[in-house]
Image (cartoon, rainbow, N blue to C red):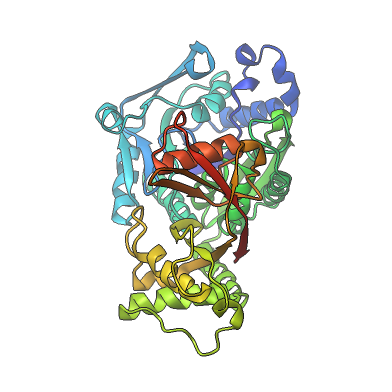
Length: 469
């Protein structure tokens, strides 16, 4: 019978490797000391297998990726140091069993080998999310096989269940293993960081650091995904899978370090297994918490959001548009406005449709029509099914009349949405979209949506939004 010996959170900035940092690594002194302490702990544990969960391999929206080639290789060529390379033997027996059990439980696995990589135009090589932690481990300990896993855009519960599958599979094998959750915290801690500064970065890091100190895995799975997106992090989903590997186990948590050099938050932490309790039903607790959160959201709905929800629910159940409710306010009946309706489910986008100019006789009818369209006509997603309705969270954005602008200097990604036009082509972006950090990105994405070339003679308009959530 195999065991999970310990699990760890490792950050992965290549800068902390001396050959790459070339003296700059001293800014992350606490992180380096933490990483070295974790590596020493792994040496003392002497696992047969190290499983690394990374954000920087091939990421799929609906699947978890795992490398299935016998030899796993990678280098720091993307950072100008191709001579720094590592190679490992894959634990294919354990990998194959994890894949089989995951598929049986409805978790899709992308099995990465040379053929798969060519078909999807992705790399099969080990990414720096694996290479940085193992660079330090390999200085002290080499007698192990590697499993290389990249998380996907699955729900927190699915990621947690996958971690539980890893745990159960290890227990049915003879190998002892340790789990490394590779990930950095917020990338938006400073103005001169890799992304524009956001006050949400510090808030995210403070919450995660407190969770790591307390070892409260329940709070990892129920973490506010909206906050994590605004913070620009990459480690939360690695921690969600790691949390699943700790299910029903007793463990001691130890936060070794936290700091934010280079505008990015780095934490090192260890979770040492001390026994089993057998009574932990964390998935049940998480489902209760999620339901309570959803119930509270429903209670706080204003009439804009409530109308959007009722409209889609009625259409999915009866195949007809909802008639205007008798108690609808004059606020929704007295004006014509362009409206966007957005659907989210389990923290992920589930549909978004809107109008750049009003097409219905009032805001209420605009909401009713666009809510149905968001759930049934967004080409990026399948139609919303009835069993999904209770999990969907709605938001409604009311657009002001647009005004022409002559320069991107008149844009503000937080304040203004953007419309670009050229002949019959038109592209629109709402303001304050996660992942868009500059007005240049805003314009580029809007042009791409409209299939307008950046060198074409296009016009721009800006608009404000009143959001209802």
